[in-house]
Image (tube, rainbow, N blue to C red; front, side):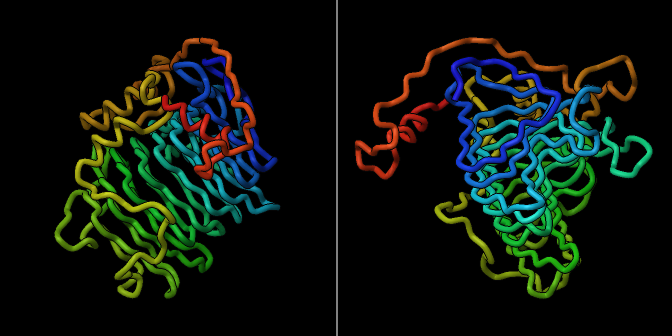
Length: 361
């Protein structure tokens, strides 16, 4: 919890290795909290992160240039479970905007704003001799399972919107704007099964978008299934698979969702963009300059893929994010509820949980 608003400057990722952690950015005074210069790594179970901004960036001092993600969920020796990223704002990554690796599962991204990764920037693949373009959106690795991407906005990612090799994806009610090459990529690696439900999403091409079906279904094992319904995008017809490039074969086409998300009923895609832009991301009532720009460009269908946080006089950095945003440093004391672990009103939530729910920035 936070009693001070403002920017947390980092040169190394913040890391969570212990379970039962909540980062409640909504408890800060307005305009909330932003992490600049690095990202967040989650390697434990039962983690909730809400109303947090993460701006990774291209400074020389920072995490390794091959892995500057805004959020990375991974533990080579463990199985992180039950992780929720809620009302967060992610920008200026130079690898993936978010990633899930190894045996992580039961991960939810909801009401989150992801936009403006750095494409022709500082990213160097492991083993490579120099930088290469790499401004990508979320990737969900082949050992992961049960991942949900709900009610979120993805803008100006060159590809991976998302790239999902997970078994058990629910992608529902998202807006994807101005992809570069590949949009939503459903794939398999080393024979991994891919069961995915992709419903109620809106795909809006922008300045950098390649003209192709927004959903790519790659080759995958015969037990894989993909369900598509009520997605909106260029080239659509009454056939929900008109938005897909199906390279797997007819066997993959599911007549009903192969996986669902408990307690979530996808809404119709009509009117989705306006509704999401009003509520998505960290502190939607007090957005920083980055979130304001992303929301405006998605609404007006302007802008494009960027390469740098700030202009530096070079032609490469003409496409930039407008510089590092500022946040006011305000203070406000918090008063925790009495008997925080009790449930005084009997609604199934502890007094502490009810107190947190009352913060609606």
